[in-house]
Image (tube, rainbow, N blue to C red; front, side):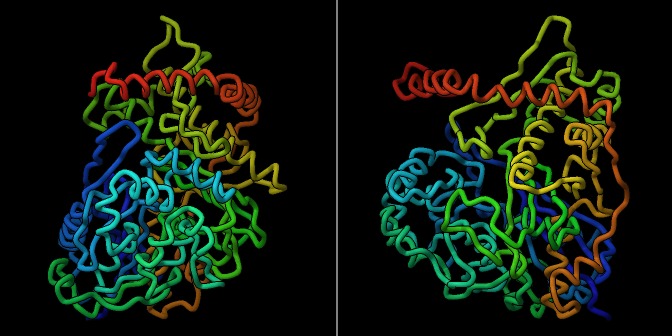
Length: 510
């Protein structure tokens, strides 16, 4: 039996998806297994590490069963995963606590402290900030830990038995692909020099490298052959760039999901918020990966569905709203939302602000509010694109993937807000496709990531912007941009009232 199936795995925030591909990018099917987020405190988000293993086992086995794929057909696998999801464990892989997820922003004060000590402006999401929080607040666990790694690296250990870091993810801890190491000066200044020795960098791999094969124990658990090889993937957003068909300069990749990321490959570094993770060569050798991101996007839509609309059936809800919002005029009858439900990543680096909706009256409907959410998420994405334009990049086309591609209305709104053409790949599970591309390169089917992208990615449709709608949206967007500078101090003060009340015992725990 020919071994011609490449598995691409997307380890997401609330689900793990497995896609089955051939070397030409033909997809034989997807299977998803879901897991829960834990929210022990405000702005804290955690996950059980064991849930990833259970989800992987379920998705692989049941996916193969559903699509009639035999284990003898599987050549290899790779994965994209959330980035900055920090795992603390011993060398045998036993977690010492729940994973601190990427969207967890408990380490705001530590990020500010690191900026004062080093002049490096890191997101509170990133590994160094979370490790500093851990050292201060859970010192026993910090000292006991033998391994500090991320979700991707933990799962690589589970698959192959090898502890390693991957260049694509470890850049956010300061790993430099060309210098082949971490910035010791940075970790000494932040009081984290004792953490560096616990980064599993005895093995270090680039995207598309062959890591090894499955251990027998893992193969038995997943129902695969022990000689199934494992290729290095990386951050879901980076792997998604490949899956969207972006492999050189000239086109923006927009990954939509719980958060939105806009990404470019450039020959020169575009943004330098910090120096320790500038690159280059984190994804494709010789290129910098420049990105701007929103902390919340489709997660706001899910919040609206569950908490406001109170609808448990997602499929029927989205089908109903897709038709309903077409009847709502551009501008949502004067509603504008601020999409900072978990704070702002770019351009403000402000985790102390929150979301709001302006313009509500007794005449507004659920459909008005829903369209307002879609428009305002699109304003947030346009605010990211504006930063590229100010840096001298002309943006005329976007390759898109993720949840937004399920809604023609949402994609048209984004095209109209940003006045750009949107290209939709045939396979919108870009992380799974990108991971399959990595697998194909590691297998030697293609000689490089760009070559694999050219052979495996195709497009199903193009969304053109409506020029008249753009004129209307451009005025609303200017109003959106003014919300933060006008309301920043008020939002900070209001957020402090709640937080200080909780800390003093004046507010009840929920």
